[in-house]
Image (cartoon, rainbow, N blue to C red; front, side, top):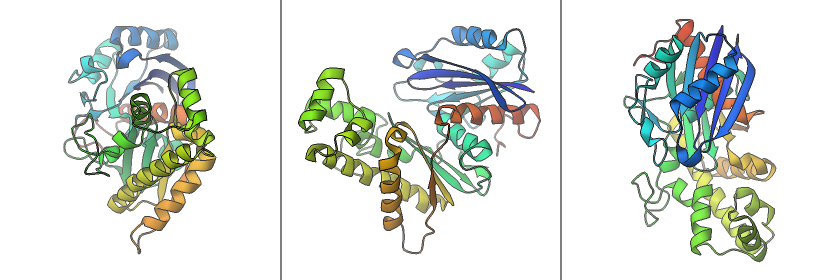
Length: 317
């Protein structure tokens, strides 16, 4: 069985070809300003396939997917031209095979519980900490999607500060608007965030800074304060996910993995301390190959389509 996985990420587009569940070919290119041409993507897929035809295609997108698993309904500031476009029909017409569309955080979770750091888990949450904050959950073996496609993936848009800034999503004081790479860039560039000498030097030299820069300069009091606030906000997101879904395992992924040795133990300790007193204290894991989590997840969904174990309908598990 040959399946194709397409990951339309916010900053990059990844393509993967799987043969009987094994990733045999992968390609990545930049997504400029969150835009992508479908014809160009299809041409790249065909080059990767080298004349072979796929049995099924899985497409991951960074936003809300309709309950039918066929189209991107909303993704703030990303892929506006793809909103409400039937991507599954596009893929079926171009490649003459079944296709399914899924939110990228859910796809990453499926990749890790199918063949990754949480393999076999039936109750787990995934939190993506990076450019934004994403989330997903599996409950008693069923991926949580909700009636309208919003369930479990909006963990980054819980309010952690009722007096905070308005998030692009429309809510006030979202975790993502206060503790993400884009929030750090906004606050640093506008002077709203006080920076120590070394962090300020990095910003001037490179035109931007990330979480790893904050971690590496945490001996400066300004960076230490930023990191502490971010850890408190991230732990609040994870605590909320744990209270909502009662997982055995928390999967932490995203750009913060560049400083995982500092961030993961701190997050685990804070979450365990802040959980409801009788709550189970879940284990914390990180993917061994986070760059392919999404590809592996949508490839599994596509393979299930071809094996007729799931259908591209409201009845998807």
